[in-house]
Amino acid sequence: MYSGVREDSVIKITVKEKNIELILKLRKILFYDRILKRKFEFLTNLFDFRADMITALYKIRLQIDLLLKQLK
Image (spheres, rainbow, N blue to C red):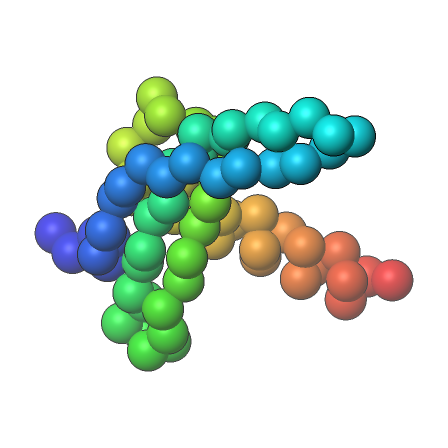
């Protein structure tokens, strides 16, 4: 089965807020959609789910957002 996940890595991002530096540990997932022929990059703090599950959740969320936009 083709999942489309090209990369699944952990990155660290430094954020400065009110003279305080915070280091955020995030998960970066690169995904290629063969139907749309597009690449997607997802940043998340969900480390307990498989990468293909996270991409599926984002796809469903996008469909919901588009539906709500049409209903306005």
